[in-house]
Amino acid sequence: ESLKRQSHSDFLCLVGFNGTEDDSKEIFKRSVGGDSRFLDLDYGRESGKSVTLNKMLDEVKTEITCLIDGDDTWHPSKLETQMKYTQGHDIIGTLCHYINERSETINTLRLAQSDREIKKGFVQGHNQIINSSALFRTADAKLVLGWDSSVEGLEDFDFWLKLFNQGKTFFNIQEPLVNHRIHKDSNFNTKRFPYTMSDILLKNKMHATK
Image 1: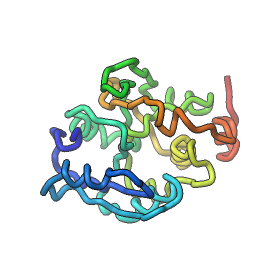
Image 2: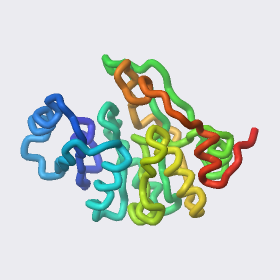
Image 3: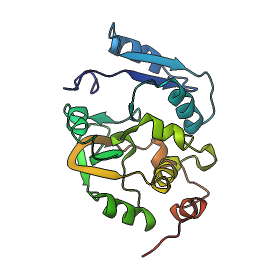
């Protein structure tokens, strides 16, 4: 619904299903109706988010790719605002509201703005790009071979570091244009990972600094 309300309406949305056992597909079909901008891709019982993302990336034909996780929403001006910055930056994020199950704002996440400060945060082990806010060039994602399933759960941080190592530039718009939903069943809150941000830095031949 939040994508349908975007002021920048020229986009194609690929929705990937990978093993859902609830009525998500039916909800999707009812919500989309006859809107041809939305296409569902069914990967059956595909294992893992990263594998699915990489298969979806193969389907992308546009110059620019954005991400949005299933629980999150975008502000109506999100895409329009980001498109104004595409000439000067490779990866563009935004600030973020944390919302609860009732869509009430419970916190606003502040992030570094400039490429220099974002990269400084990365090497300190702090992710500075919200996944559902990210806009980047499709060719860059394919250059680094997308997301690494061996670090599932921190695949987004690993993805940004791979782009960092390719010399790509980052920028965060200082407006909260994304709502990230926090609830008891979300992957981020319920899973424990066998590795840390420091492990991901070392994997990318980078060392955490204070």
